[in-house]
Image (cartoon, rainbow, N blue to C red):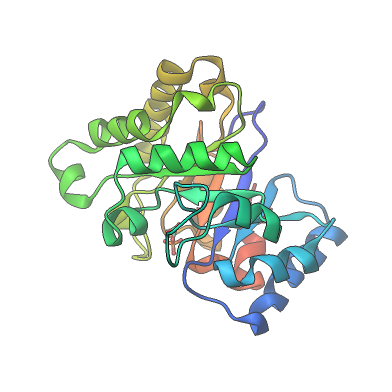
Length: 250
Ligand code: PGA
């Protein structure tokens, strides 16, 4: 954990959650109101819940974000949601380049970079995800893959702007597997160097989150590692009873 960067614990609900589940977000907010967290806390529900979640959490300690946006500002893009729409709905952050978008929707670095620009144009704070496959790690290519993603996914427009980088090894997402502490620390150090190489001073200030099977049982160890400034949490962000101990582990 770095002293100068405020940690962020962000929850990614993925394609889970109906209105009935908003109580979980309210429970997280109520607990943090009673006892404030050291970290910033955000929840990224499906697009359909953003405005209702933002209304219910307004003024409280939990920020609301989206899981994706379109690269274009408006127009004939059936089914897509723009940065301005997310902002209008009450979202303030947006996850971009998640491996499920890259793999299942064919998003490449160039598209992610355009989406980051679209987010910045509307004042949304991007959480840009990178991470290697198991085959890439086994082939000794984890660092070079991630470095390439960092360079390709981050537009120069980020200079001077607030953004977040999330390292999520694809093989650790939703599997219960995690890299060793040494592997996480080594990758985060490498990412920091890549961020500074690309963006200079701005790259020094961006929090680097770890994501992939973060749970109450492993959060404290992961969050204590150097250059780990928080976590991007999938499955364990759906229930307040799982998410709160992770927030408290900072
Ligand atoms: P997980 O997902 O915590 O369920 O592994 C993390 C993510 O995909 O952001």
